[in-house]
Amino acid sequence: MPLLILAGLFMWGGIAILGIVLIILAGLVVLFDSWTNRPIKKSAPQGRDGR
Image 1 (tube, one colour):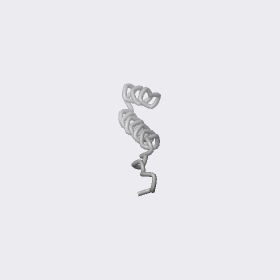
Image 2 (cartoon, helix red, strand yellow; image 1 turned 135 degrees about the vertical axis):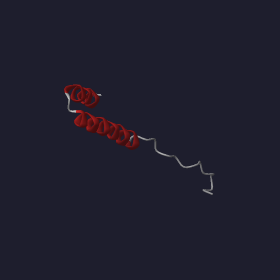
Image 3 (spheres, rainbow, N blue to C red; image 1 turned 60 degrees about the vertical axis):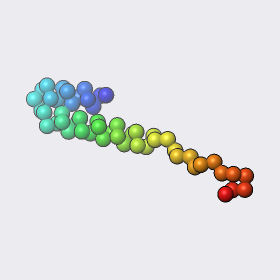
């Protein structure tokens, strides 16, 4: 969220390219964070004899 606020301030202040870069950077941070915190896949339950 702070990156988006800074991006808005930069865009409002006339440095639009830096604001766009910060928006992209914020998106990458969210994407990376959601990818690293994805649930671990559990294998299918096995029978008693392991088959």
